[in-house]
Image (cartoon, rainbow, N blue to C red):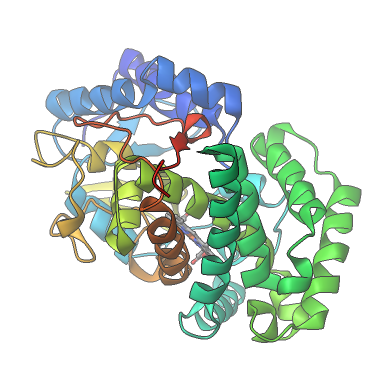
Length: 392
Ligand code: HEM
């Protein structure tokens, strides 16, 4: 198995991993997102990984990092294996994720292991299963109010959209009483800001307790028609921070889907294929594992850089185009915006329903699409604005 030269290891960090970190993994930073678009950061990153593939071949590429074993995956078939064999021996709970997510969801499924993880995963799968609450009704309601606002000012900006999207998210997760509780999501936003820094930022336990107390109040009401009604509050308190956090990605995906003229659930799928909101999927092996005849030690971190797998025009004829026909069952095993295998996003069906309801309610009333092909590899969602249709 190939080991990257020191220079190429440096390139992997400087051109692929650090720019992704800089945009903010847990919550996007506005200025870094704008800069990334300006310098076409993801196109540079994809080209860098492609060169690794040409130089070293398709097997996982080991990076030369003292004291750590890190392997960058370069073949879609290896991605499928890594995800299929999670969480054992390829754990979702990697040290980076633990350090980041402990800031606001120390008992989330994603950073748990063993029987605790199995239980927490089951809670997620059960509560997030679609059809249990009227997601369409809630989102359609908020879309309606948002459209009224957009028509009155003549445009839809990211900020106006985000406010409506968060109101819908709070209603879905916690019920209508929480609809106006912007402070709850503001507190979470602050904690997510710390989480961007993982171990480099001290944990603010007092702030987390304030957030948790507010969240508990909503969960204990167990309002009918919300996810909070579907399991005991104690159980949900550990998982709901992830749900609120992850709704952000759903909103980003929805606005980008608008920009490409997307429609329906396939529009959301394509949005996260073109611009994956989880750009890097990480796994950490719990034992030594064999890859193409080479053993990699226990504790190896496996890195899947999704833009490389989703946007390579040499492998995918539609790499930079809107191609909704790919979904929901793409033939390429490297197309995994919601991850795959036993660790696949348990909220995907719910967010596809929420996102597509919002998308379809808005698209006919706005001047879209605003982007042409070939679609850019980096798209700063903060900068998206749509003009309302004049005949509306
Ligand atoms: C566009 C929106 C979303 C995308 C692209 C997305 C993508 C993903 C991905 C890639 C993972 C795997 C992470 C990893 O392996 O480290 C994941 C995990 C997860 N997602 Fe989502 N997600 C989205 C929205 C949501 C929503 C709205 C919820 C809840 C309401 C949710 C709940 C979860 C949970 C609980 C996990 C952890 C699963 C586990 O530990 O097994 N996601 N998501």
